[in-house]
Amino acid sequence: QAANFGEAAEIIHEMTKEKSKIFLGYTSNIVSSGLRDVIRYLVQNKKVDVLVTTGGGIEEDIIKCLGDFVLGDFKAKGIELRKNAINRIGNIFVPNSRYIKFEKFAMPVLEECYNEQKKTGKIFTPSDLIWEMGKKINDEKSIYYWAWKNKIRVYSYAILDGSFGDMVYFFKSKNPDFLIDITNEMKMLNDETAGIKKSGMIILGSGTIKHSILNAHLYRNGADYAVFINNSQEFDGSDAGATPDESVSWGKLKPNAKAVKIFGDATILFPLLVAETFAK
Image (cartoon, rainbow, N blue to C red; front, side):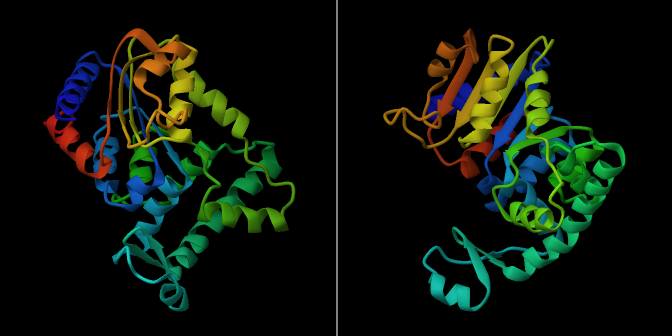
């Protein structure tokens, strides 16, 4: 994989040199498990142009502004943690109190968006909600504060797949006509690829973040550059494990695209890549 790492660094150098529009996708564990500051650095310094993540990738950035997570142990017993109102993310402990603080932050955001919906008919997209949360958190430690400040859109088809989804559930139970527009979210993300000279993607992990970025590039007959970092295998036919060459067959990467997949731990590899490229 060392050769693939070197190739990835060269691809990132070229995509920045060519002033490509850069799409950065990352799963929620990337924010939970230590790369939050690296993502924030890229957004704060306008090194990337579009973000795509999942529900946890949003809420856990906001929650960390409200209270720290604690380094724990992978082998900690769930039954003991549950008795003490502690949730485990791998070897990270998150007390329930953090989610109570998040609820107090998120509910007024939903209330404001709902009032706007009733007043004007505007139905907020997930990226609109993230925009509002980034503005209201007003904390320079936050990825989404800088995304709001630097006008970098953050898309999340899976925004409800986490604690924020629970908040929406309770809110909608009281306000049945409250809506979130996922169809316009899809259109806005797909439109991000229109009319651009060069396009590059960096995808940490897989699932919806990988597919949604790749699929958006189908509408311009493929991206010019791609770096994938994940441990998924190709043998099961999953999109997660698909190689860049499979993406070429769909028209999501150009036939002459410069693309590489690195099998490995993104929390180790991506900071090294950023140090070698964006931060150099």
